[in-house]
Length: 367
Image (tube, rainbow, N blue to C red; front, side):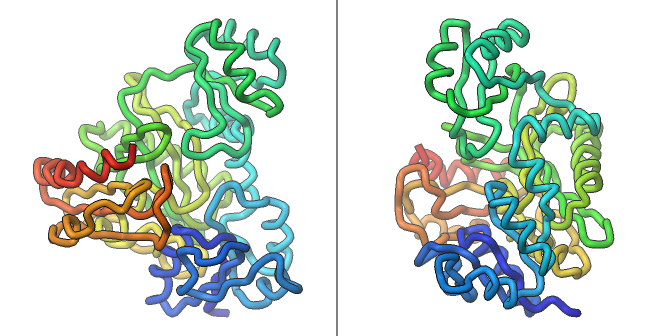
């Protein structure tokens, strides 16, 4: 049966961009979310979980279901999947929701990770510091986003502060990785097991929030490009993943080291809307609907994405530049909130950097 209606758990900007990509493919969208006036409010039907018989009405109204966040309730996903397919499946979701489980999966597949230890008591934290050395990054094993749920232990003197901030949670202590930059690789896998991979992105973060992505990541060796492709292909196949998967990576002298994965379309892939032959959002819709996957090649030799965080900035500056494309999410201004992004395309590294510099005010406003 042809897929005509996609259900989305959530109704934020990722759901919005999925709907914008899927609508030309003659796919309709139904969103399952309690919030009012969301980015998706005008792009499909909204069913509130608190309304009468909400979940069953949602299930009965769609052909396939997906989600926006790795923090989605895995038990809810499994409950829905008993009646209508949910992609990506709960195996991908559960592995991405728990950092210890995730890192163990990486190790099993031969994907390099930082050294790590499980921490549930202060004594275990002390032991982890002794074993791993300092600095370490202490993280909650679940939840946490954009730098939340983390503390850095630079010296043993920081143990008390870090423990006070995060105690009460299961934690993972990760050895600090010496890296030159952060990268991400995004891929999509369809229901037949076919896979397409996007070029590596170089990602600049500040205060735990992505600010700028550059594509393709400059000066990446052929060996590291192949390593990234191998890593994410192994994950896709092991998980039986259907849809888009993102793997965040550290670029080190000895090769790529995996940080974490996200079983969804990703902020560092927003550039694909104008920068790639097929956006990550369209390929996610294609994959979960059983359509053929689209080409991932760059339309221009270079692309970039600048997040608009907190404040709107000078929209006219963006709209007056032919090589720039503005995407706003219909969100109000609020500190550290992602309210939109700018995509840039260029035919040289110099031209790309010039355009990024032109919109430097947006990057500065992010802070």
